[in-house]
Length: 130
Image (cartoon, rainbow, N blue to C red):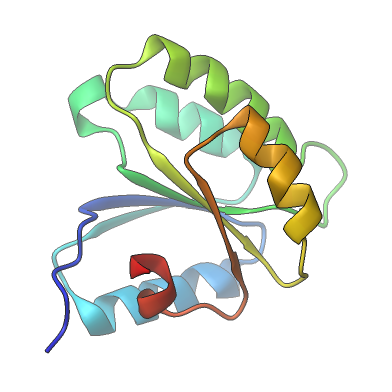
C-alpha cells in the first residue's frame, strides 16, 4: 500500500523537458491528486512561483542544480527564493535533482535554504517521500 503523498502542488524547474515528463510519470503513477507546474529556467521558475497567491503556492519545488544554458543556475534560484521565503509564512520544501553526486555542494546550499534535500537522477517517488 502506498503512503499518502503529502504534496498537492509541485513546481519542477529543469531545463530538460524529458526530466519533467519523467517526474510527471513517476508522480502520476503514484497519485493523481497533484498539480504539476513546469519552468525551463531559473527566471521562469522564480516568476512562476511569485505569480501564485500565497495560499496557492506549490508546497514542493524539484530543482535541477545545473542548467545547460548560459545564465542562472540552481544556486541562483535558491538565493532569490530564500529572500522570498523570509517574507513568507508558508515554507516550501526544495529538493535538488541532479544527475551528478553533489553532496558537498548540497551542504553549502543548505546554509542558503535549510529545507533542502538532494536526490540523484533518476529519482523515484519513494525517494521524494523518504
